[in-house]
Length: 65
Image 1 (cartoon, rainbow, N blue to C red):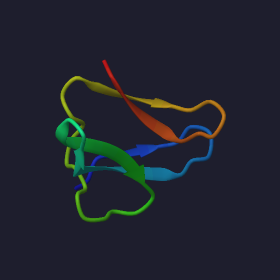
Image 2 (image 1 turned 45 degrees about the vertical axis):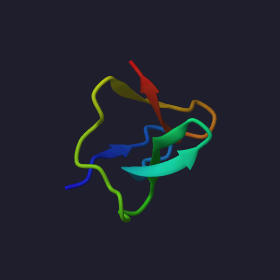
Image 3 (image 1 turned 135 degrees about the vertical axis):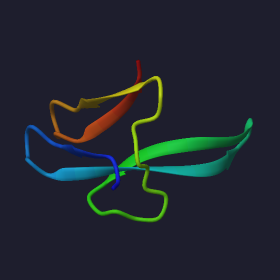
């Protein structure tokens, strides 16, 4: 089962995903939330991160602890 978070403002469920991408400094892993489960869905929250919610939009945000 994918890691999911429900928005307190809108009640929408979001699923956590990760994707490796190229950048100037080399490869890095990007995390993002989506309303649907897609390729790259993560089973658990990455270590050292916490989920917060944008007060304006209600979208979940992943931040370092």
